Image (cartoon, rainbow, N blue to C red; front, top):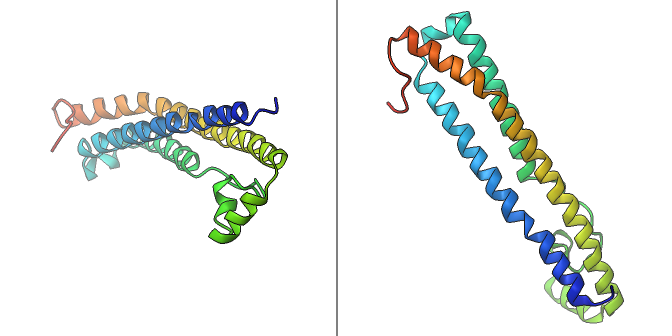
Length: 167
């Protein structure tokens, strides 16, 4: 497997997973925010003095905060590694433009091949961490659904109304 084209296609495949995980991060961020807004629209300050509102509300909030935490970590994974790489963006920006061009021209095919293979490995680690964080965020969000429903039912009953989706 010494063909640079094959290695480059493999790197492209790995990099192709990033937009997929980013779409999940953005979608879940939107879902979490919508849940939070709906909950906020259906509660008044006086409701929070009632334990049967505060407990499901607190469980809901904890679930969403855990989910937001993992989404944040998924957006900013550990990008260390790839020391002296001519491909890894974080290492490229450490050089001047002229130095980068000169180093790239001086690079042997074997060095470039190894650098590409290193990037396949490093980016695979990064995308796996992002997916793991999204999975944890989805689980935390899912665990907050039951307290959310209970919260809406209770606040709706207190105010004798169907839970609102808007002002």
